[in-house]
Length: 310
Ligand code: CP
Ligand code: NVA
Image (cartoon, rainbow, N blue to C red):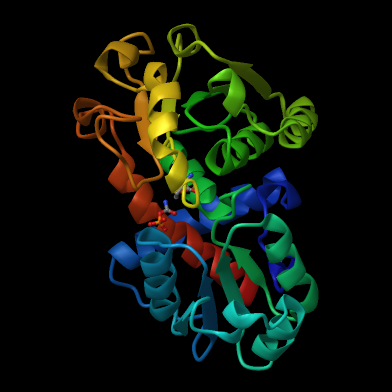
């Protein structure tokens, strides 16, 4: 799909339903090829820079492995070790890196920093998580839901936890793919109003619904998918104790799962805290697809890099 070449991937809202469908199909295709041992190297000789201002296991390893499998190479750039950490501007960094690399993946705090990088870079910029969004995760999650359920349209997904990056990207992704999403959070941790507005606008176009609730028991009725995430995200470590108290009623456990559809799928972007947002029985139980999700990060991002950088 020529229309994706050279584009940035900063948030799902920038992509049409057709483009997201295309990326999922490409991910499925490349996953199958790779399982069959077929070598596919459309990015031979291409370089991906990976800027990390926060920790990562999945994002780092899946991008680095992915670009390598596509014939290219990744460079891990800790923001502590490059000049950006000493005050070199994002604009200058973007222009310098554009002279060496073929793509940049960045994980940082502010979505506006990612947008700024993309504005000044002449190569594709991929958002590897900000406080606001985690679009690569949701691309892999949509691929996973399609693998498990067969279709995305009409599925009911209930997200329980903090109304931040994962909730936001799931809302936008679900809206575009015609799904029904309920975000369930304590009153003080609702998704951001501007994201909800945006998701509702897309929902109207694609036959989706966007709802919010503070009642997990009621929300999970008829759920096809239950999704959760950590209560204290990266950068919120100081609030850990308080959050554990405030989110106490929002744990995904066996009792809650029993109130959803009998074939409900449990999802988590990982890393997880057993005994906090999810019980060990649920995340390690038969409804859980968390490692299928983490593996699909590799396949979804390989498709993404192929489309943007190929
Ligand atoms: N889910 C996810 O992005 O994991 P990492 O923080 O390990 O990259
Ligand atoms: N909400 C979590 C997601 C980690 C992949 C965080 O931002 O830390």
